[in-house]
Image (tube, rainbow, N blue to C red; front, side, top):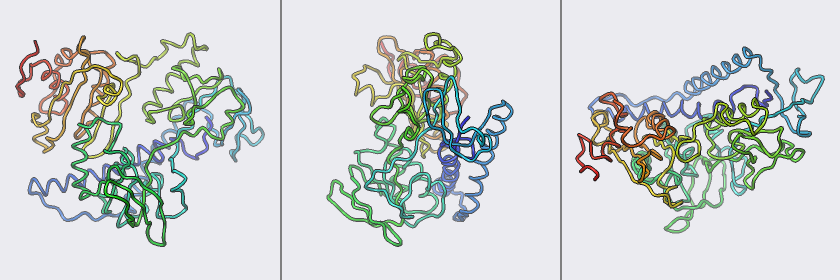
Length: 457
């Protein structure tokens, strides 16, 4: 295992999923305390934010998990080399680093190599600067300070999650998005409750259909040129967070010395078994395409290992194969860990409308859920996309607390090609939000007790 960073774990553990969700946990607790005061008459003193303590807790969490990975590698007798690798040819890597393991030989030969170099933050050239007042998600997760004002460029999941953290910790956060809505890849009905709650948190400082022009850093702030529906303006912020996406780490790998190729976006081209155009080289995770998700990378890894162990692409099918469901594609869930959370899996309405796929909707409004009423979160909803002829479930979307936990059950249903009727045969505990999954199917079939809808003919 060749890894340039001194700790194992990659983007997810070191500067992505884990630290961001740890900080989001803090933000969610602060929000819950505010809710208790507003809606339940339970008053607490205003929170005192100790950034040093928060950073130490975050770093100790990362260190513990990274240490666990190192122990697992050792116990499984995996040779770990701290170095950067680049291909000399299809079966040889040139290694660069100070690891004693390569002191006598800076090359590594192999029969198969799996490229898992991940991705890095994308910063358009026009915004590139060494100013400490302009940061990416990497720097934002360091939590060096809470600025008085923060502009988040990008209304995708990274911008919304980190913007939520900084807002709950005391910053005056503004979000600017070039599209006409937040999270353009998600269904509108799922985004609507999140937009409303974020707008309350940010006092309406969400600017849609707005382009960001030049950034002019100064000694204590950044002047930002904005062009929106009402014309061009110049605003000043103490800090700017650029969160407009990520790019694959496919550069400087020496791929030109092999038969492996990349597409126009820089992703390494590979087939369904993760083989590139070079029979000795495979690629997994962010570096070989969207969605850039850790669990998608894990699924890729299983496919790649199965293919290598099968010794040929022709015999790889069936070795720890990932379920594909009715669509023939793996069902990869997406989760936005904001408040409320948004999660979806399988076919979305956005995709169905774009590609002309026929579907029917099964919707359960959380206002009918006793659990949602009890916790004061009735703005949520659970929906299924149903195939009209067979009534098989093609996709699921959820917005509300713990949507990311609930979507796992939906993935199983989609993978197993369940019908709406089959969704109603399992007994969910009451009162829980999980009841909304079967409840949506019951509404669709006209069988719901708590929601009246005539039965389908």
